[in-house]
Image (cartoon, rainbow, N blue to C red):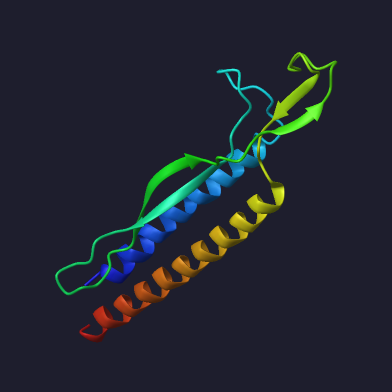
Length: 133
């Protein structure tokens, strides 16, 4: 009975993770060295569909993995930096602000769509239950 709300709630949770990952990427865009010594690598969220129920209706989504982007680091010549290599180059995070903003807009739109669906479905249940009163 509450499948629609569960599906929307799974979407809300998944999009929250996507927004958190974008925020983390933007916060680390100027990180030249992580504790391991390498520059920060931009991350992405992989969403997976939950299996359908016996009636063949999908059950929403879940976060399958948070992975690192395989794109190379950004190279900046700055021989005075403490992070410079022997050629005077510093490797910075492979974070594209433009890509992150697109991801953020997509995640926010999907979040809002799921929130609207959740609210509408909740209103339907309230009306249904009040009919008998």
